[in-house]
Amino acid sequence: MRDDAFHLVARAQAAYARCIDEGPLESWPEFFDDECFYQVTTADNHRDGLEAGLIWADSRGMLTDRISALREANVYERHTYRHLLGQPHLTPTATTEEVDSETPFLVVRTTRDGTSDIFATGRYLDRYRLGADDAHLTRRVVVCDSSRVDTLLALPL
Amino acid sequence: MPSTTATPADPGLRPDWPEGLTRIPYWVFQRDDVFADELEHVFRGPHWSYLCLEADIPEVGDYRATFIGDQPVVVARDVDGEVYAFENRCAHRGALLALDDRGNTTDFTCVYHGWSYNLQGDLTGVAFENGVGGRGGMPPSFCKQAHSPRKLRLAQLHGLVFGSLSDEVPDIEDYLGEEISSRIERVLGGRTPVVLGRFTQALPNNWKLYMENVKDSYHASILHLFFTTFEINKLSMRGGIIVSEGGGHHVSFSAIDREAERDRAYAEAGIRSDSEYSLADPSLLDGFSEVGDDVTLQILSVFPGFVLQQINNAVAVRQILPRGVESTDLHWTYLGFAEDTPEQRRARLKQQNLVGPAGYVSMEDGCVGGFVQRGVAGAGSQSALLQMGGDDAESSESRVTEASVRGFWKAYRAALGY
Image (cartoon, rainbow over all chains, first blue to last red; front, side, top):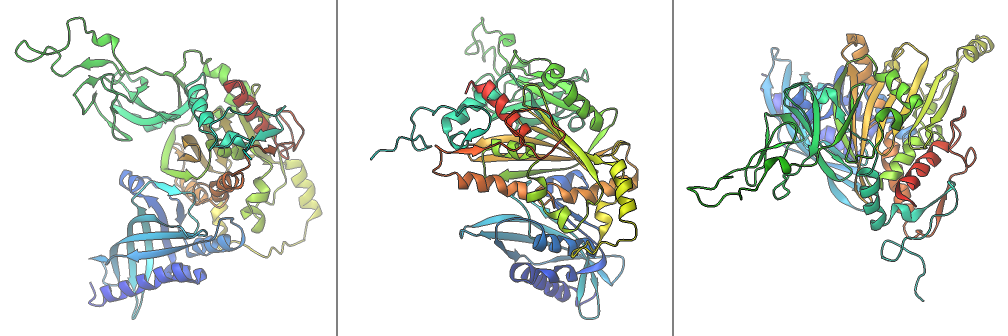
């Protein structure tokens, strides 16, 4: 594993969380490679090896479409997230240019009326491709601890 | 001056129901006494509630714990290969028997005092039944056979398991009627469902607001803008709704209209679409004919709280469980089939983005019930208006109708005597 792996992954994750929480959401797909996989699932489904996701995307184009749909088509009440991420736990892969990462997260959702609630907790199961001075996701599986989603999941995790 | 209208804060008598099926009083979404009536007469009454899939409990000893209304029940597969269901409650002091949502076991033993039950729910063991050293124990007259959780009536239909706590409930075939059961068969018949995922959506509204939404074919193209924004559903469609005789069950469907499609293709030859928005990855909707016909959408509901959905190749069952007057759990089970090719399975996984709590065409249904629940606060004496498509609850070739919603209320009022 490269010496700078932790630094690059931590920096990418901080920017990723800030992108969702503060915007612009349109930049969110840029944290992924063109060929990528992104899934939001639950701990139960993940443990049981069930394939489906609340969100299931196997291209960056599908991530772009998620944001377009949220902007142009879908109806939901205004709300924001605040991501709090733990430290990434890195494990090497077969190649030094890629690294696997696991990171705990907590997401607080603040709704229009000012209520702030814990919306989701869980972990990111990631594979990052390391560039010269950056890191991009080739795979992010968001495993939520709870199997319940309150009302709806619009903004990505 | 004292108010004369009944509200949740007013424990007075339930007001009368307005005449007919075109006015739905808002108090029906607000009152604790109505909710208690529903649990007793709808969910524990002579109706079939969806419990699980046979595919959820394929092996001997597999079980699932679920609910009929608010009442905990267990569904298990016994050593004889048959499915049984019984109340998830120890006959001794009432504690839950199964503490996990699902698992595999040889028996159920209550953690409180160790009373044990076989997979059919028969009481088979009582800890210290004969006392210790000749002292204590149950009286000689105690008979284990006389003490078991209540057993449910069960009906299995194309891999779906329904249960009822009532002995009065008609056979499932009579309950559903031919038109509804043939549409269940259309999607599930002769196939082997495979569970692809399970998700629960907590809805901030009364359970009936979700059932109304499911049956409401009028709102689909108005609230859900995904298809129209991205100009995806460009084929000419024909469709309609089917309302069961008693009103409680429905099917809404649309199918490719081959004839209109030929005419349109001719008329539009050479004309390019210039939609403002298009999908960056249109493979989202690469699919296949689900069962070899032209039906691209079939939403089917069974009274009181079951939905079977086919939206293109996104197939799912939904179980609607009330948790309180203003709180409902919607349990989604996404399905594939053992017969799927790898390409078909991949198409399903992509199309499931359309549905569920984050679904492009269903996320709005998660919040719109809450908009009504909040909107009608303080308006218990007012009514909703259900006149689109007339005042009856009959099948229709138009989907611009609220007939299936009226059908729900027809069955609901019959069940409750309202």
